[in-house]
Length: 211
Ligand code: PRP
Ligand code: URA
Image (cartoon, rainbow, N blue to C red; front, top):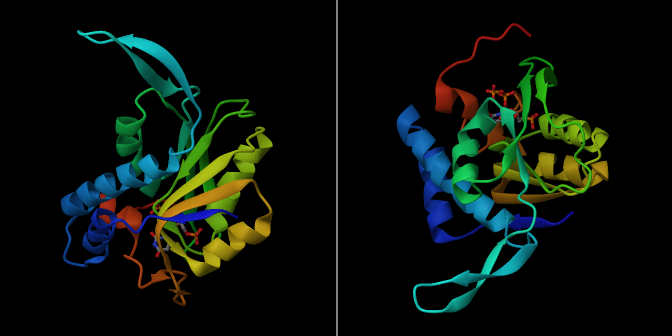
């Protein structure tokens, strides 16, 4: 599996703000939005472009635009924090939604929403979720996308645990990963170590879904 680790100093400084337990909800959302935009920028590097002539006030120049803007799919909740930055980078992208919540005892993802285009064949799909821990949630989401014909998927995650990276790699699914860091461990509650805690809670406050 192709993995891109964005080790740019601005990305790493935003990551540090996200990791810092003193960062409040507003600061966390802002740093996540900045870092999300940087990762989407990197994830878009090899998207096909078409060329056209653009008339400047002086003369005609070569113009470029995305041939086929990707579809952005956030894994709700925490992935919601990456939609606005993704759309600020790619304003004409389509957006689909997958809602999953990990069961705190089994650590398995429990699905509660799927709102996706019927046919994803031939499309570039950016699956965005700040956290890749055991990999259970991302694998579930990937299977939903593949079932709709997607075969060109980029997972965009702020922090990836080695266990989640291994799970993606071993799945054989058509996915590449763009991330800011690969953290070494998971704790007994399947939280990433050192990680940043619960991304959904730090964005929006504690959730209350009956699983
Ligand atoms: C978090 C995160 C991922 C998942 C990662 O969501 O946003 O979706 O956990 O864990 P995994 O790799 O072990 O599956 P969570 O289920 O906590 O829901 P939330 O975003 O609503 O808080
Ligand atoms: N989900 C999170 O939000 N954080 C983790 O560390 C693991 C799963």
